[in-house]
Amino acid sequence: MTTKKKGKTKSAGKSDDAAEAEVVAALPDPRETVEPKPAVLQATLEALTAILGELEKPAEPQPGDLVTAVMHFVLGQGVACGIAEEATRRLDAEFVDRNELRVTEAYETEELLGDLGIPDLFERCRTVQQIVAQIYNDQNRIDLGALRGLSITERKGMLQRLPAIPPDAVAYLNQVLTFEEVLLSPRSASRSQQKLGLEGGPAEDFVQKARDLVQPFGHLPLSIGKKGSDPAQRPLCPSCLCARIQPGKR
Figure (cartoon, rainbow, N blue to C red):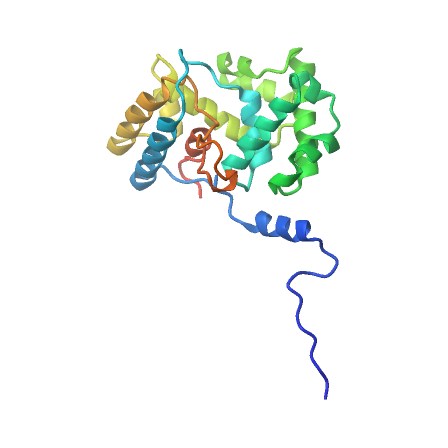
């Protein structure tokens, strides 16, 4: 009688880490685009209220760091925002400044973040290093704050000079900047509001309430709060919660 061999629980030759990475990569991205329908806007508003209520407000509103926003997106795609937050926190703690990160090899950064379960970590670390280097070469400093004062055409031109920033990260950055204009600009931002699909009764209500929540911070935070909790279990940060809202896309 022939005895059947028991099936293996993972593919032969694959390490536990590789198998885990495949599972993580197969999970839906929590930042998947959603349309600005009333139910979505209400759920987003409730999440913003809960998260921002836990964060310490600055003494005065402060602009957010757009370089951190890009790094957050690149390192956090497909995983929880808390993991991206922990990754950028470690980078800030490990390196004196972003210039030190610019000249650091990607494998060193990979070692620093290796236990976070981020898929394709080496490639992401190399992308982050290249992004930081290109920003420095273009701006003579590692700062993307100039984007806020540029027209759409000028902004596009500047970002075209930074090809290391992946297209989906560029789209994320543009969404963040558009939401900032709607929620934080003292001037009329009706065109930006229209671009986001935030028109009509429920949308107008969302904008006003979200504006009241965000304005004390001066930016859309990338933090989730709940320090000490499992990063993988934390919800989307305010920046990602808003940036995923786009009309006419699924």
